[in-house]
Image 1 (spheres, one colour):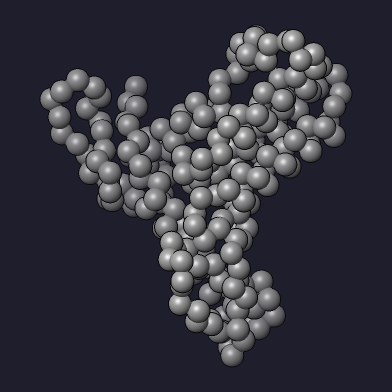
Image 2: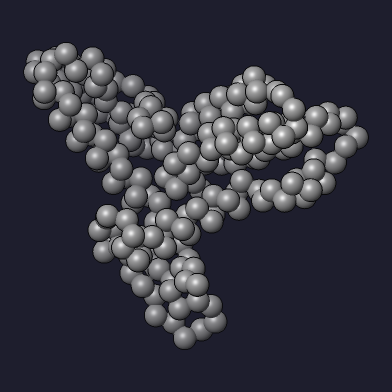
Length: 213
């Protein structure tokens, strides 16, 4: 089984996604002024003093925001996705508290509703965030939620082993490998593979390695 190694291709992929978002916003606004209220400007830069220039379409100035939500992913101007992590963690914890039923239902609830919340579009924002521990706390709290064991002396690590749950970081890593595998084997309609350079090496390790773009 081919398991090509990922070497930080996420920055280019993220910038590509936001170029598409900007184009979609522009096309949506061109269809009529009624859609301009849904259009916002999100500057992605690291400058401390950005150029303060307004953006207008059809003589209407667009709103400048520090963060925006598009296709379920909240993005900020620094591309650190902290707002997204805070939002999905809060939503996942709230959903878990609402769906507090029997253990079998709680188990399915976590796998079907809670975990997908914190893993949505993870190939875009992971591993850029430094708040992965906050997501792991969601799973650790969910282990107590599923078992109904809230004694502080109980071992959460033992609960995770009993459920055979890998860490969310491990699952995101596998998801990134799966995405790159699909791109490399043309299972996804994208030309991003042209941006990757296959590394030729006779040293130990898998032959299918990619250099950082």
